[in-house]
Image (cartoon, rainbow, N blue to C red; front, side, top):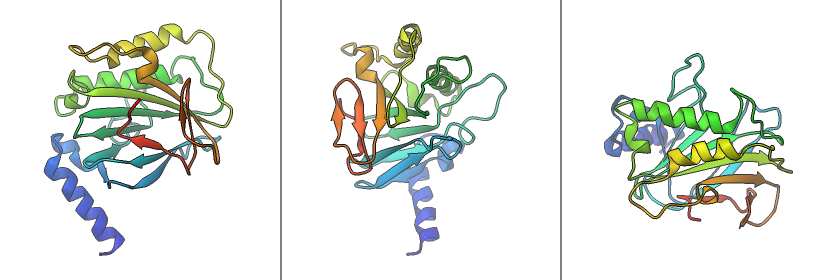
Length: 206
């Protein structure tokens, strides 16, 4: 089977089991065991996040420019991964070395606006309803500099991630800062440290 035939089959598989109606074709199914580097081609720092898929029915989409239309004042994150079996939604925003808190460019607003859009859209609200475990990954290459004054923005975003009816998880359980290096082993203590040789496993487990 050629590459184009495999891609068509993946789209067909996605449409069969996803509940998102007209949006189904904007999701790409990732195979169990697949390793992939999520890259921001627009970033001058060439930011990326290496992942490894460890379950079936894992789907990738790009809110920025594909899933969500360009609307003035609406910010969007770079990637969204939906793990249907759990279910779990992972929101990924790729940044440079400095993580900004400026309006319109900070990852907290970009992910928060993405969640708000999904909640309003009838066909997509299942991605963010109360039964779905939600995680945020704010990614930067090399040395990661966290800005001062992020606490209020973190808490605001965290409130949208917490599942009702379950044991309430802390901010650090749901909002993850990811430092990507060339060859470091995987670590998930104060922040996630990963590399192409030691990627972040999706679905994510704390």
